[in-house]
Amino acid sequence: MNLQMFLILHLVSVLLLSGVTFAAFAAPHPDNRRRLLMASGSLSLLVFLSGFGVMGMMGLGFPGWALVKVVCWLVLSGLTGMAFRMTDRIPALQAVAVVAIIIAVAMVTYRPF
Image 1 (cartoon, one colour):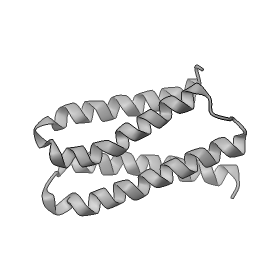
Image 2: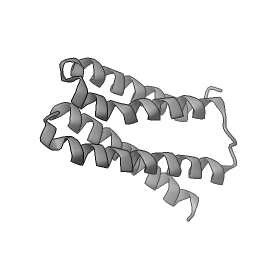
Image 3: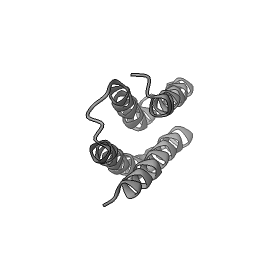
């Protein structure tokens, strides 16, 4: 697999993971739980593998900004399950998701450290 395919796979899986997370916020009904958690877990694994695949192919090692992105990925991955357990705190969870996404995009764009 070449670098462009890993990048496309990573970007698409991040977008879909974000969409699944916000779908869980929008409809935290128990009927949706199994389907959304399975999708979130599968996409989260794909984000992880494709992200490290991109870093490996680019020969970046493990810079500090990548560690920040891993933390953002962990936060975003955990929020889908939290949406079903903390339905009374969904607005706060949505804010956390938005902040995590903004931080991750800023880290990959600016690569400050």
